[in-house]
Image 1 (tube, protein in one colour):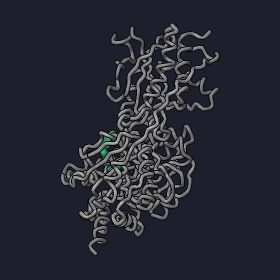
Image 2 (cartoon, rainbow, N blue to C red):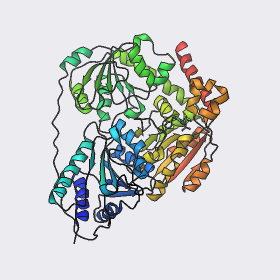
Image 3 (cartoon, rainbow, N blue to C red):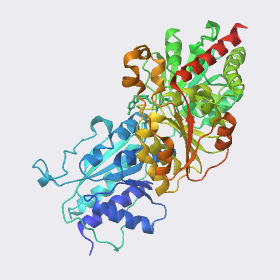
Image 4 (cartoon, rainbow, N blue to C red):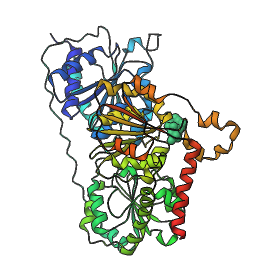
Length: 556
Ligand SMILES: Cc1ncc(C[n+]2csc(CCOP(=O)(O)OP(=O)(O)O)c2C)c(N)n1
C-alpha cells in the first residue's frame, strides 16, 4: 500500500508536471532516496520527462541553468543535504540576475536532527537568501489530506512564480525522516492543473511616436531573453529604418541597419558628435559594451527603457522614460505606428558597423580576433555559448553570423565558472552547440565535460589557449610587471589535449583561419575540442592593430 511519503512525492512530481515542468537534473545522495527512486519510476512511464544525473552539484546547477536558458522554462534541481546544495550557489546567483527560472529541491534532515551534531546536516533554511524569489519547506511524510492538497497547490504556485517576469530561482526544502524507501510500482495520482491567464497587454505609443519622429533615434538592444521575438526587431530595422546597436546577445545581427562593434567604434573615437542620438530606446539587459552606456550618459541622451525585466536596471541612471510592457507588445505597436526614422542618420550610422566587418574580412592570420570571427561559420540553427572574459568582448565586437544561430552567455554575474556545464545544458536543446572559451575558464569547469559523454551531447569547444587570463593584460595592473604574472596572468601550463583524452573528446589543433573555419562549418557529432594557441602579449598587439586600422580608415 502506498504510504504518505510515496503519495506526497508523487503529488509533488505531478504538480510540477501540471505546470509543464519536464526537465530534472539530479545529483546522487542518500537523503534524496525517495525522490530519486520515484523520479526514475515516473520517467520510465512518462516520455516527456527528461532526467539528467550529474555527480558534481556545481556543474549540475549550471547544466540546469543551460537547459532553462535554452527552453525558457523552469528546470528542477535535486540534491542531498549539506555542502551538496551549497554548490548550487554560483548558478543560483547567475539565474537570479539573468532571470532564469530554476526550481531548487533540496532534501534535508528532519527538524529533530537539526543543530545537534547530526552528520551532513547544515542549516538549509533560506540558504540562498535574497537570491531566490521564495523559500518554502514542505513536509512529505505527513498523512493529513491537507498536506497533499497543499503540495498540489503550492508546488504549482512555485512554478508559476519562478517563471513570472522577472523570472528567477525558487527554493523548496524537503526534510525527510528515515525510513526513506518509497513504495515502487503502485499507481500514480492525477493532479489537476491550475490555469494562469495573463492579461492581454496594450500600449498607447501616440506620445512616444510624436516625440521620436524625425529625431536621431537609436535602438540599443542589449542581451535579450529568448521570449523576445527578434524578427520584430529586424522588421523594425528593415521597415522603419531605425539603426539598431545590437549586443551580440540580442541575436539580431546579420540584418541591414544593425550595427555591431560599438565598443570598438567608441574606443577608437570614430563616431563623431553629429552621430550622437537624440533618443535611445533600450531593450534587454545590461549590454556587454560598457562604453556604449557611458557614451549615452556623457552626452545626456534621453533614454527610453522597455521591458518588464529591464526597467529599473540602468546603472548609469540615465533613464528618461520607462515602459513597463512586454518587449513584443512594444515592438508590434511601434511597427504598426506611423513613426518615421531620420533616414540620413540610418545611412551614416550603419556605415560604421560595416567598417568593422570589412576590416575583419581582410584579416587572415589565426589569432583570438579571427577565431571569434570564424564563429560566423557556425552551422545553421546551432547555438553558440560564449564564455566571459575576452571571448564575450571579442564576439560583441566582431561576430556577425552567416546563418541564423542563437548566441548565449552567462552575463548576469559574469562568472568564469560553470561554463562547460551551462553550454552542455544548452546542448540538450540543439543539434549542434559551440562553446568559445579562454583556457582558465575551460579548466575551471572541466569536470562539467563529463555530461557530454553521459548524454551523447554534441558540443564543439573552442579553447583559446593563451596560458592564463589575457583580459588583465588590457588593464592598468599589466604595468605592475614584478607581480603581474603571479597575481593576474596566472598561467597554469595545463595540457588541453590531455583533458580532451580524459573526457573522450576528439581533439583538433588548427593553425590557420581556413583550417578553423573548415571545422566550424560542419556539424560535429559528440564532444570536440578545438585548441587555438595564442599569446597574451601578442593578443594585446593584435587588438591595437585593429584599432589602428579602423582609425586609419577614418583619417584617409
Ligand atoms: C568565478 C570567477 N572567478 C574569477 C573571475 C575574475 N576573472 C575574470 S576574467 C578572468 C580570467 C579568465 O581567463 P581565460 O578564461 O583564460 O580568458 P582570457 O582572459 O584569456 O580571455 C578571471 C579570473 C570571474 N569573473 N569569475
